[in-house]
Image (tube, rainbow over the protein chains, first blue to last red):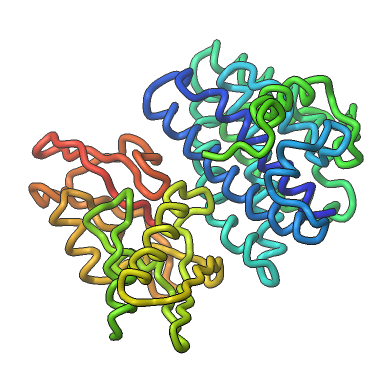
Length: 223
Length: 156
């Protein structure tokens, strides 16, 4: 169950980040977002291959031939990209989570041990941008705060069992970044959930339609 | 080294052409038993798109050197880091205009972000333009002295 949940987090995050390709606010950032997407995709492929070995399925089967109800990713990663602030706040929340999670699993898990360094790099990048946007202009601050307020409720789902112990470490990473960026930490209220059980937002269906269309139209196609 | 080992070690990285996979430190071993060869490699980054090409290249290199049966295995542990780049590899990178990663770290040493020395003019007065570069393992820099932009292998 863990492999599939973490694989799907990485896969769906990769697909969302890849939507920025050729649309980044500047060339360097366009490349950065595509690079991060590539790292996420790399981890997703390794985890899907391992999960598939137990289920008797290939990584392609799992990525391209499951329906939305069979995906186990958290809701946070399937939400639309929104503006650049939404993307960066989402990446901050996600990479802080993935880094902690992979660190916890790393001693006995070679995929996690490999992915942890990449997550640390993503976290650094997201932190730099959240600081710059939050503590930037009036407009960038407004948008960054809106992103934090909108996305915060979705972070609760990340720490559902068996990962409830990680919330504290995550807060220790994320909250000082928000504070330094002059962004207010929202109150804990609404806690949308369901992703780990396959109950997703409508956004996932649309994302999958685009991600899977080629494979479904031409089953087994390879380069 | 046997002929097969030599041939495999000489395979070039498809994205950093000046380096062999042995220089880059992603070749973990070549085991021969009779005509059967097992080659073990590791990725720099999990999503490195060059891995499929490298797999194909090492397999054909081993076959050309006389191996009858070739298996290419990919391992993740211990994870690759820039410490795996050989001294020869570092020299080749610098000569080709790509700044090698900072000197090898000892276990327990404090990680510091050091500035990159310009591979063209040698100046230490450089700035990072982007933490992500033309491939997953590189970042983009510029020299303030000679004004040239250059790639650097990300400290990892």
